Image (cartoon, rainbow, N blue to C red):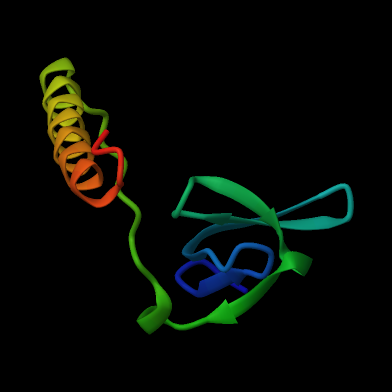
Length: 91
């Protein structure tokens, strides 16, 4: 395995692009860009670019978080109305 290859972590199925390969204490470690973590090479298998999906993390602003809470609240209110029409008690 070398930088630029694609590798899949067998335990979770995570596929990442190999950014670095290093040996420490007799163990080969491979850095995958997916979560910016080093994985024991023995737990990885070569993969292809067709299985690779770049993971992008974006912190939400307070405003985005509040908007999401509001949408969830509205969804819950709609679900409560539907449940009220289905259950015999109407509640």
